[in-house]
Length: 137
Ligand code: CMP
Image 1 (tube, rainbow, N blue to C red):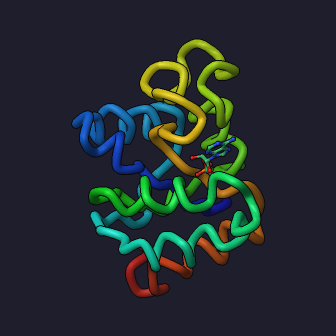
Image 2 (cartoon, rainbow, N blue to C red; image 1 turned 120 degrees about the vertical axis):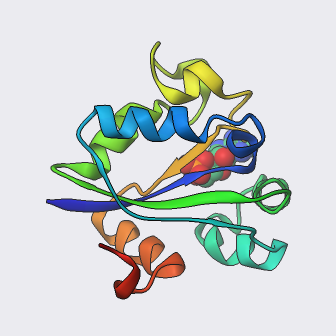
């Protein structure tokens, strides 16, 4: 059993496809262990994406992530990290397989609807960024 952090980004929330996205996780055997809607400030977004601080897209990415509310979730299940990444599809929707969330809904490599942790270590840090142990059930 593994846990991973999933985010429905501001573009996904604006498109009103929260239910559609959650349904894809559930249909693929992932369980929602925690969920909430939050609004990141620019500073919050910069802290969350600190690993990308040297990338040319850091400023634009953190503007985007703080432009509206997001849904943060802890997904739980067998191989949850890789399963979530398969369901999301490649970061750039142009490279994402048909039937993935990003291929179906994303506009471009930045406005790509969802985020998912990329390793067990990242999952631990990212989950702790948003949730206390008491909120994960
Ligand atoms: P995510 O999986 O949340 O991880 C980092 C995010 O940075 C990524 O999704 C995209 O939203 C964004 N990103 C990654 N690569 C690029 C890029 N080349 N240009 C703009 N944004 C990017």
